[in-house]
Each structure stands twice: as structure tokens, then as C-alpha cells.
Length: 309
Length: 309
Image (cartoon, rainbow over all chains, first blue to last red; front, side, top):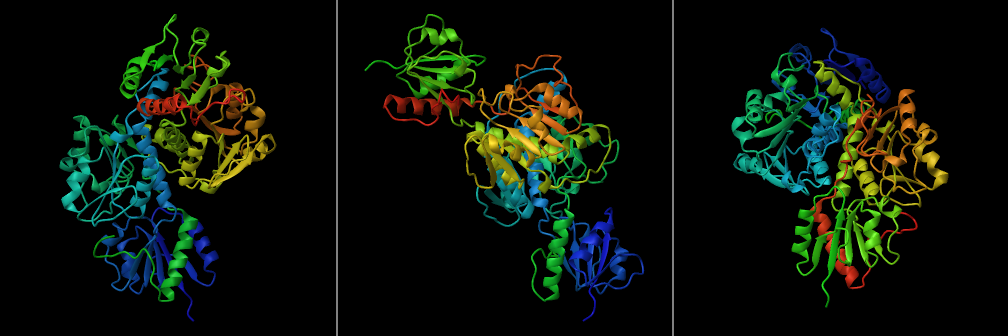
């Protein structure tokens, strides 16, 4: 039996702890950081690899993508026979639920305004908002979107969900397809974007669509920067239709200095930190899926390359 | 049949919408704001009433307290036959769950540090913390504490609970009584205080007890300011044993200007806003309980005056 060969090609990721973890879990496999000219491998663990990587590794059987989004990966020419496997959760879903819930709660409960008052030395009162007026619409009901919707329902917000094809989730009012997008938006006060980035969803959050949100609307983008038309968001914040936004993702990351998002008083920014890949959980998933593929079994999380997610 | 007479005596509360709501729900009752010398009433709706109120209304059958805590009320001399009724939830439990979860999440996810970096124009990375290292201990497992524990468990934090008498809650590691308090504290990284204020719990969060929290501990006080010894918290923040605190309640409210909590870099303050009484829900509860008392039925939420909550 030949030795299993795994190559690791992840941009902006310290390789040592990943290699150590894979070695420990798969002691009989060869695991190494990819370098140009490296030996052919059976499987690859990747994050934003260069085209050269795939050009030199046409024999790959499987690719494990350690981030939740495969949009950057699918822009490359991949070996035709390869299967692309996404980690389904790896601790990301609960992180995303945390991030989105704290953003919704801070807006709903006026906590930014209270913090500003406290900084100014003022003990103040803001009239509580009505929960029934704060329907939250979640766009994209995959593993992350479904978990976020469930967490929002736990806090008794009215929750709307929109997805390409109909999905039934407990406690979520479902909308689907292009035909129901306007109704979904008009029924929502807060919009949470968790769509995959595909040609169909690029620039989906534009002026026309964001204008359909209820007055005083709030936008939370935790998917990809290219979903959102930056200038359209700014125009709707400045004309008062939207009350604010929490943004974790941007068309260019790091967000270029001088971009108007940096200091906009109605925008809360974080540096793409809403859901981090957690190494130990990810390694356990990669190993389990890799062994299933080796046994010829099907695995969950296979990416449909044509569909784009 | 004599007309039911209800008097309203609530400090810092605009009476008009409460009176309008009670009139609408109980059209045959007389409802009025109490003034010195007012006619005797059957029931009272109160928040921080003066002693004179009870001295002039010895015939009262029942008192409805519109805040969650009855500690201030029970320091007064009450008519001996009166029943004191607390509203059990009135929308407060979900608010408390929101407030506490956002405080825990902001600390766990380093969101204050990220916000400071963004204000300085820096796109940074902080290594994620381990959820398994962030056990949250909830002191007090009444309606509010139990709801908060449930919400924290929803985000997959390890949750400990401490109460005077043993209580079994799903997903919560239970501790009870004085004998298990040290174990509870030593098992917790974050402490959430939701105890009732009684002679037994006044000053319970002192230097000795807070020192037993795990290093890097974090304190969230959403019960009463008198549970916490201010100087002991400051000493443990300044010597580094505690990483920070979120405080919504204070020994004197509004918090006096010049108090060191106002500008302490490790303390997040809010002006007693963690859970507001929601008027419509409260009025519906008051009316339902009042009518049950009139029919001679038992009602939930009766305060044990001797026990203090």
C-alpha cells in the first residue's frame, strides 16, 4: 500500500500547527508544505492557493478548503477529476451566530448610543424599541445562515429567511428565488447577508434592493465584500433610509486606508473576524472526510463546481 | 358590587400610558395616580414608592411591583395583610439574555480590542480564544438567571449555575449553597450576577470571592450594585487577576460623577438598561393576576417577604 501524500498550501496561515495536527492524526501519511516543484500529492489542504499550485498538481484526488467560502478557489483552473470539499462547520457556525447576534442586539438595544453617552459622562435613557418591529432577514440559509437564523429566533426576533431554493426552517418565515426577494426585503428591518458569492449574487446588495428594506433598516454583511455595492450603501446611510451597518467583509481586504467605511459614523467595522477557522476541529473533519474518500464513500460538503458553492 | 380601585405610585415613570393601558383592560375599575390624601385603594401598582404611601393605604389587598427586584420595596413597612406580587417576566428575561450574551460575546471575541484597532485605522488579528476555556458561571437561577443560562448554552459556552437551593437546568452544571460557592467560582471564567439582593447576598462579590474566579476572569453585574464591593473589583482589575467587567447596576444610581467606574479602561458601563419593564406585557400580567386574586385564586410571582424575594 502506497503512502498517502498530503500537501498544504494556505496563504496567510502559519503551517506548523496544521502539519503537526495532521501528523498526529494521520501518522502514516506524508504531510508537507507545498513548494514549487514539490512531489505529486494525493490530497491538498488549501486556502487561496495560486494557479501554479494546481498546474503542478494535476493528479490531485481531493482538495479541502479550510475557509467557508470557495469563491476564490473556483476562479482557478482545477484538475478536472478533483473533488472539492468544504468543511461544513469547523466551529464557524456558532461564531457566526455570536457575531451576528451581538451586532443585532447592539443595534436593537441602542448600545452604541449608550456607550457614547457614557464616554461623555452622561447617564441617559433611550426608549426601548419594539421587538415586533425588528424582523431580521437572513439571506442564504446554508449551514451558517441556518445557524444564525436559529440564534436570532432564540432571542425572539421575527426571522425571515431567503434562499435560492425553498428551505423550511423552524421559526423562520421562508422566501425563495428572485420572485420573492422584494417581499423578503420589504418584510425585514435588519438584513444579514450570508449568501455564497457567485455571478448571480455579486452586487446583489445594491441601491434598488437595499431601498426595499423597511425605513431605519440595518445591514450586516458577513459573507463577501463583492455582494455589496459600497457607494449604494453609503448613499442610503447618508439619505437616512438606512440607520447603520455592521461590515466584516470588503471588496478589498485589508480595507484600503482612506476608504469612506473606515470612519463613517453609522458603520461598525471588523477585520474579517466574524468566523475564524478553528484548527483542531478542521483537522478532525479533514481527516475523517479524507479517509471516507479513500474508502470510496461519499462525504458531506462536496462543492458543486458548476453551481459555484 | 363595589368598584375596584387601583392606585399607581411609580417613581421615575410617566403615569399616563400606564393609566391608559389599565383603563382599557379594566374599563370598570377606577385607576388613578396616588397623591397624599388619596382615597383608599384595593390594589397598588408601584415602583420605589415612599413609606408615606403605605402609611396612608393600610387597607391594600395587593401590591404589584413593576421592576424585577423587590429589595427596595421590602425595606418599607408594608400593610401586614398585603400580598406582594412580582411580575415574573414581562419581557425582561429575553432582554437580560440579550444583554448578558452580547457582553460575554464581546469579551470572548475581543470585539472591544478590534473596535479600538479600527478607530486607530489598524486592520489587525487577535488569536481566537478557546470556548472550552470560557466557562460562564451564573449566580441566581430564577426566571432571569435560568433564561440567561439557556442563552449562553445556545452559544455552546460551558455554563455553571449557582443558587441557594439545588436547581437542575439542562446544559447547566449545578452548584448550590454556601458549601459549593468556592467550587462554582473556581470553575468559572466569567461571572454573571443575577441574585436577588437580600442581607445574605449584600456584598457577596467581594475580594475573597472574586479572587477565586479563574485568572483573566470577567464580571458581569446585572442584579444590584450592593452585591458588589466596588473597591474590591477595582483592586482585582488593577492587579490583573480580572480582565474586565460589564456593569449595569451601581450602589448609587445614577452613578455619581467622579466615581472611578466611569472612566476605568477595563470597565464597560450602561445606565441600568439591561432589562427594561415593557409596559404592555406588564399591564396584561397585572390585570390577569389581579383578577385571579379577586376570584380568590393563587397567583405565580408571590414574594416571600421573610425570605426577601
